[in-house]
Amino acid sequence: MVMGVSAAVLGPTFPDLARNVNRNISSLSEIFIGRALGYLCGSVVGGVLFDCMNHFLLLGLSNLFTSAGFYLIPFCKTAVLLTTIMSVTSISFGILDTGGNVLILNLWGDKGAPHMQALHFSFALGAFLSPLLAKLAWGTTASAQNYTEPNFDRSALNRSSAGTSYSLLAVPEDKNLLWTYASIGTYGLVVSVFLLAPFFKKNSKQKKSTASDQGARRAKYHWALLCLLFIFFFFYVGAEVTYGSFLFSFATTYVGMKESEAAGLNSIFWGTFAACRGLAIFFATLLQPGTMLVLCNVGSLVSSLFLVLFDKSPLCLWIATSVYGASMAATFPSGISWIEQYTSLSGRSTAFILVGAALGLMATPALSGTLQGLYPDLPIILYTCLGSAVLMIVLIPGMYKLATLPQKQKETVNGEDQTFLPSSSGEQGRKCKDEEKCN
Image 1 (tube, helix red, strand yellow):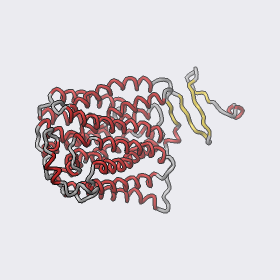
Image 2: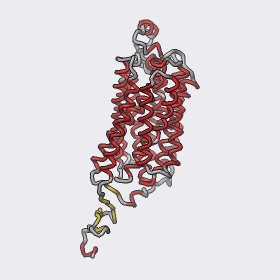
Image 3: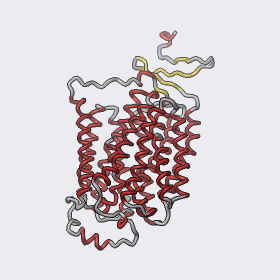
Image 4: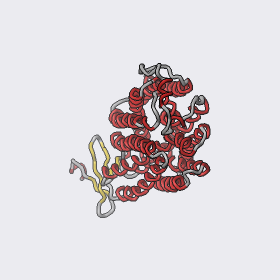
């Protein structure tokens, strides 16, 4: 939930942050690059540290870094400092994401689909609450439209912020922005206490993972399959973050909605996202992860197509946004659970997949935001979502083909690797170092 609130709050507060650092939205797109680079580094580092550190200590410290970053963000008065702090804070995001997914896989293996859905549901719930906290609970003080219009007169803004332009850190004029980020930082601080508590208990011992006793599956084309999933999550996360981050600004400037309506639309997106992730916990006990993956992608394709065709219709925007949020909900956890059925994921393998997600988080929103600023009369954000949905649909058959090729299974017995391969009679033959013992 800390990650969900922290990730989704950027969308509705993006205009306020731009105002705070004396920039417009289109010129502040580098913040997405910085955030994604931090997430990228955190994913890689987390995949390594999770195999050699106490899980509770690592997750607790990551939450502490998140809290510290969110306390500092509203005080940033320059775009460079804001991007830097966002990047450092996102390192903890990457560690939390990698650590949480690997921990679920270690505990339940290929039987952990409902648990994986529950883990990602908590993220979606936080993302749903975030716009409500940012715009409805604390409110807003100015219109975002002034900072996205191409003919916006920046001279007044420069004069109003002249007193703070010489300092890197200062108390923001918009106290609502301050209280929004301080609330999230405090929440993360409380959660970190609960995560660190088991580490400091005298009798706290990390249980040996049950999945390690079940044998490690490895697909014939293990890394080729991981590479396809790398690309798949690149498009998925890029589209999800782009739509969630720019939906508020898109609705106010392109469609002409009021800020309260745009905040409600943002909440609808994350609300259906969270609700369907909650329902996916139960659906995961009835449907195979592959089936859920296909259904989610078909829904994303249809809804994004309607968004492009009826981009000026507020009614269509409400309906299609709801469907799009619902369709995107279970895609990520279903993808992780699906690949675990065919090849086991270690901390480093999971980190590799999440690097693809981090690159999508970095490249897609930044490019889309820049293009939207250059072509304000075109719904670039919607084109991005539709193009990503098409490419994801194309990738699914290739991933399935690689995953269903003959597999080899590897199991560790008494500290030594034993490789099992199917024999001509259908039974499994075993390769053993001590031939006499085998006989």
